[in-house]
Length: 109
Image 1 (cartoon, one colour):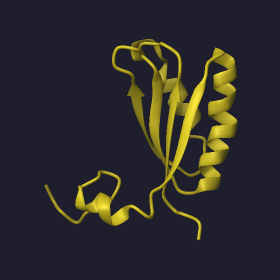
Image 2 (tube, rainbow, N blue to C red):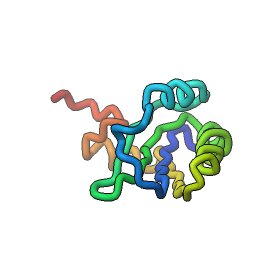
Image 3 (cartoon, helix red, strand yellow):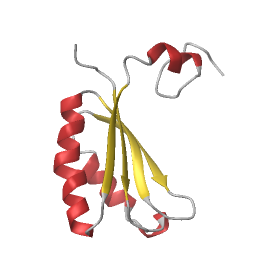
Image 4 (cartoon, rainbow, N blue to C red):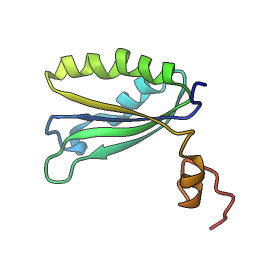
């Protein structure tokens, strides 16, 4: 069975302060990818690596994003990219128990 909730962690091994990134135009390009549900930007403390934590609706959507956006950008900046994919379905109960914002826990704050 294919997972319906995929999390992707990506980090570029470059040092770029987040304030120097045109994140609005990058976001416009990201939003063109079917299956991308959300992105949380990440900026490394003390080293300014840039990355993100993404949620996709399918493994195919996440892989297409890697192949068509992340890898080409890596080549453009002549950097290194670290990517990891995670199955968000199998961890549902544990995440709800911890009030993860990516899962409806049924608990109101």
